[in-house]
Length: 462
Image 1 (tube, rainbow, N blue to C red):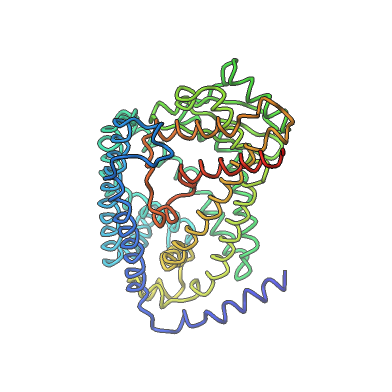
Image 2: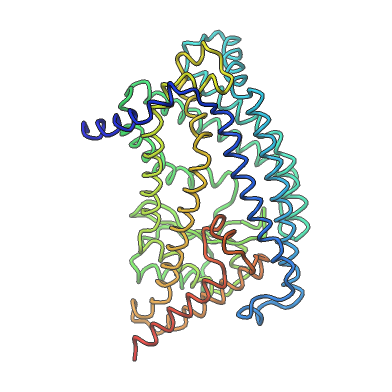
């Protein structure tokens, strides 16, 4: 532990300039955030011309009729235009809030609200919680029209929205309620650790964060998910038998197999698993069951079980912990830097002893360009895992010594194509746009991968 603290102290010494150098942090954040937004705009402009193509890639030509492909292109074009406009509007809003001292005003407003309840500035953790929710609610409300437009205009136009205005409002209030109920104790514990551990907070916060993440694995399906969707046991039949048999042969610790009413809100489809290492739950969207044959859904689940087999969720958790550790290791230099707060319009009285939550919020804003690169790296890792899971599914015939898995790669390919066709997913994708935005390989990339794995297996048999 002492070695860790020594290394962290060395990092702080290298970052000592943060507290003393007269840096215009606000200008830097404005510049970096606009640079990221303009780069994302550039990527959209690279992608947009591909929506004017009149034919799908050759490998998909037999799976898209002319009308479906045209619908797919129009859907992609509308989503791109909406993303372009909404991205620029959100950036303008963020820039205005930053320029005119919204964060400093929110801290003062939180203090005034607490004063009305009889609490003074010595209740920093309580004021910090109020500050976060003032920021959250006041920055969310201006973007509500964009959410409404995206749901009830863009998605509605192309036949995917199943949400009513009443359900939209109900979901909104449920989300806000959950933010308060779960966010308040989380923030209180998070900030208490800073106060309790002092400058040695990093390992303790790491332990707290991973404990919280693992707790959410249990809490989410039992408490949060049922607030928004109904989970029902998958009905007996061919599909259930196939999945239970596959899970048993792979020794996947399946405890529950659910169907979820995803069609309540959208026509899009998906399947996933969650749970603790010894108790897993598989969830299949009703839309996936309606759109695909049982043997194709089985192939999709074989891919998902590939993620479990190769410990992909665990590996992603470790990567995310490394990311969190890096952020926490850099943060102390900004925690003890009054000049950073004054650069964002906080009064000298507040900046003299920087509130932890304020310093952390500003620190995250300063990290904006770094986070963009991290996102690209995480997408690259995720795409690698997707290829591995596809390969796992293709190798099931050999792994299980089972003839009924002989055509699994063909079934998975058909399932992926069906999902793309039914969801009107984009099939022409710019490589740079994909690298930045997509956590999964494109459809054509995955189909090529499946053909490669299939050929390798055939060669292995010779």
